[in-house]
Image (cartoon, rainbow over all chains, first blue to last red; front, side, top):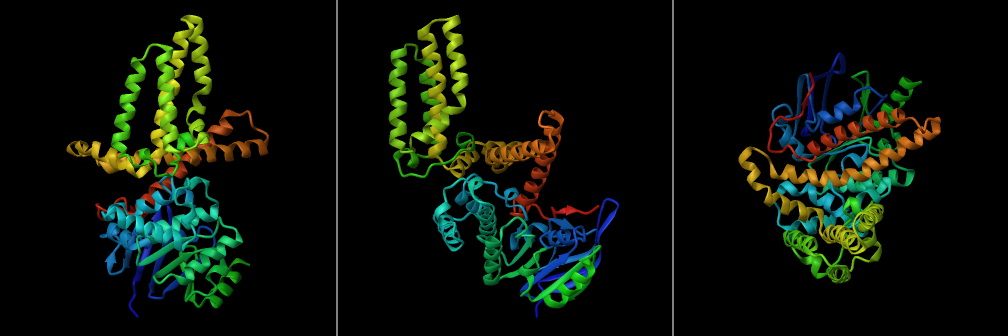
Length: 227
Length: 211
């Protein structure tokens, strides 16, 4: 199996606090989940994968590139979905926000319009294309944020607590979308049901991987840790 | 809020199809004409022209009203002051001038996508490259400003609700501090999201290095 993500003795220190303490892992699986208590280093781990955070020491290699040397190139190949969609929607209307992602690709206008229409249709937002983004519901905003990432056809998708602000219906919708995505997906979440059928789960505690196994075993370990 | 957030109203009218640059040039020309008009009768004709333009655009009466609604009290105050300190014809002319100019600017917003406006601004700002500024980033500022209006309004509403829940609704400090903190947090998250979407893709190694 080709390892698309490799972390080698990664340490991240923020101020006086060591957020990640010597994390080593190779992640070739298609769907990888990360769970852990608040402040365990999950979000920092996710941000390492597309170069938003660089390690204090150790190396993070994604698709053969070291994030320290090629952060920008990696960000073009690794999509990132944040918890709060409001923070990542930058254009006033739905279609414009998705089109904005393609801005740097210098594609012909017709091609941009076709790709935007296709992805909005696929995720049920076609009827909202010209609506102001701030008028969408929380679930629709998260879908829009997802469309804006997926329109770039990233090779890897990293999601930081994508269902935290969603109701049950929209959480299920995101779970369905995740199941069908062809690319590798790394999801950080407290939503154990979302991760239950993943290929592999990592449990983080105080900046260390304390379990790295199947979802069932990892969730059991996490529950014991939290009890 | 619609007027402020630049709610584009989709359509296929001649005004929608006109390039953003032509619409902005037309707006500048019509506003100049408004400044030059002196007689109330001329203003009535100008109002008719603006009405026809709105009708041609097909944006609807509600969208049209949303453009001038924010200046209604200013218009009333201006009218009263002009009547007191000048005369009735001057009051009619001055108020009409302001309201019609705002309506015309709103019409441009309602019939122009933000991306089209950004592309035009980017072309206009291309000489800024000579002094090391990125025209794309400058035009992005416009879009982010428009997008931030409803976000800030939402943050302010949440802070107000929290104030009411804690019974400190008259405290300026209890309103300002959480609002500023929330706004800074939002700005931080927005900056990170822009990086994640490849806004730094011409720079290599631009992640936030852990110290």
